[in-house]
Length: 427
Ligand code: HSE
Image 1 (cartoon, rainbow, N blue to C red):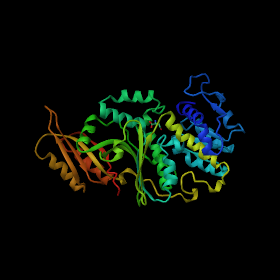
Image 2: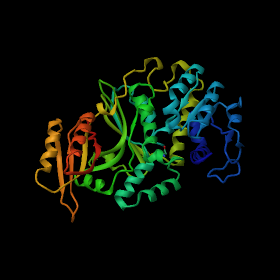
Image 3: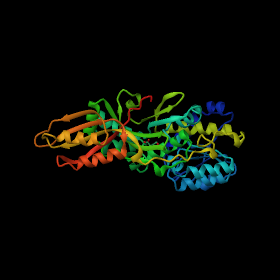
Image 4: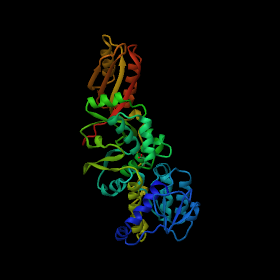
């Protein structure tokens, strides 16, 4: 009965008639567990039995569906497994739970013939799970890229547009109910990694492998980087990227330069967007509110309608949790970052003297790294000059070696700022 719980009660009540017309029967909230019964809420709880003991809800024989909106993977996991053991269907918005324990949860649900629905776990109100799992079922998904953390996108947007301070924007996102209980999950990319893990599994038919997802946060991005990127025609976004290759799956969340002409580069504020490239359909883009009470409730209630419709359906013939049949999941490995191929933005501080640029380009050339664009900013006063380079695609392992060699030059000051770059074109 927090932000999303309150939103769910409100949407279910307000749209009760419409929802019953769609589901073929009414959906009624009978119980709700809450930490503090007397807390002031955004919803009217008339007709709902409130309790501080969630076990009462998951063990009530009259309850058919449990909606888990607690978050975290401790108590939530226990309750979801208990509900499944009791033969109840589950609807959850809990991305950490699904990303980390989904394999176990779906196996139990399969055994018991119940559904665990999790549309609200990824990109708030955007029906991206349904789109990838069902709408794109004809396709071999080649890659997907998403702005899937509203808080992080809100921070980057406000920093860029209004020059606002990082901490100040984060505090506003927390006040608006967008941020995670621990906001480092938002800014360090952990929340996005949870969501990306789920998307990759349903896109490629692989087990959930959150631990293998690479994450890099947005805290090192400076206003200068944002400005230089703009000068070169790019926006910096905190992007989740999953790509299917012959050798394995790329699974990574990091700040990324995206050409500003791409629609996804213009997704601002708390909005989310996911770009999915299928071999038959080509690139498709899904956009909407990624956080907030009613947008997330929209996905929760859609799942409730879906589950309600399946109450009478044969468990063997339902849509599989991870889109592919459980015994048909692929063992394609998640690639280490050294084996990932991407383009780069590099920013370095260099001594303003002859031959420095030649040394840098020689190292890149020897490593087989081709430069796409270059920008040199003249030194201000006593300071070094700044060089910004965009490279063509290269294996990250090769780039790591080249960066180490450049940083070892006497004429380079400090470490090189490296931001990955994705063109996200139709290929
Ligand atoms: N903290 C998340 C976000 C909430 O900002 O996107 C939605 O999952």
